[in-house]
Image (cartoon, rainbow over all chains, first blue to last red; front, side):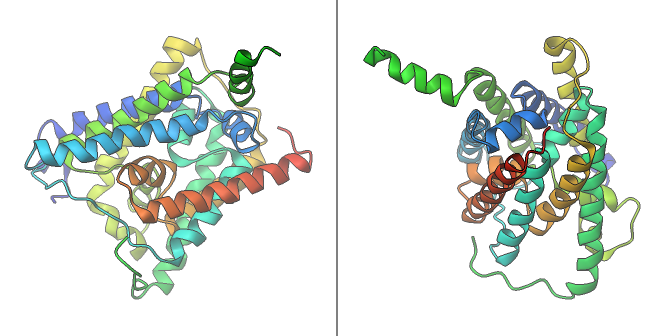
Length: 156
Length: 163
C-alpha cells in the first residue's frame, strides 16, 4: 500500500472522512461521548451501552460477511477483503486489563474522546493528553524492549 | 403489580433512558466502520490514531510501522470530531462539558493510552470491528477490559468519588 494520500484513489480521503463523520455522529448520538453515561453503565445503572457495542458489531459483521462475497476487491484500494485478525498473546489480556482500569476511572475510550471534543467538551482534552502520554510511554518502552515481537500463540 | 407490566418495569430499571438512542447510535457507529471497510478493505479502529499521530513527531521505532496509515487515520479522526459536532449543532443545541474531575480524565487517559496499544485495540477496534468479525482475540480483549472497567468503576463509586 502506498503511504502518501496523493497516491490514493481520489475518493479514498472523502470516503474515510464520511465514514468518520457517521462514526462520530453515532458516538455522539448514543451519548458515548459523555463520560458520565459510560460510568453509569459500568456501575450497572444503565445497560444501554450494550446496544451500542453489539449494534455496531452487528452492522460491521454484516459488512464483513457481504463485502467479500459481493466484491472481488475493495474499489478504492484494490485490496482483497481479508479478515485481518490480530494474534492472541498475553498482551491482549494485560493491555485489555490496563485499558479497563483507565476506562472505569475516566469513562473515556479513544473514539468517544475524539467525539467528546466534537460535542464541545473541552474538558476532555485532559483525557486526550493522557492517552497520547500513555501511548508515547508504551512506545518508548517497547522500542527498547521489543527487539523481536513476542511469538503469537495460535492464529486467533 | 399487574403481571404484564413486570417486563416493562424491568426494562425501565435496566434502561432508564430507553434503548433508542443507544441502538440507533450503535448502528451508526457500525455503519461508519462498514462504509470504510466496503470501500477500502480497511478495518478501522480509533486507538491506532494515537501511535500513528505520534510518528509525526517522534522517532521511536515502535511508531514507524504506522507511518503508512497516519494520514488517513488523521482524516478518520477529524471525521469523528466533525460528526459529533454536527450532532451537537443539530440535537444538542450547543456545547456540552463533563463534570468528571480532570485528574480522573488525565489518569484514566494515560492508562487507556498504555492499555489500548499494549492490548492491540480499544472499544471500536476490538469491541465493534473485532467482535463483528468474530475474532477470538477481540472477544478476549473485550472481556478483559469490561471486567476491569466494571470493577474499577464500582470501587471508585464505593469510595465516594463523584463525579
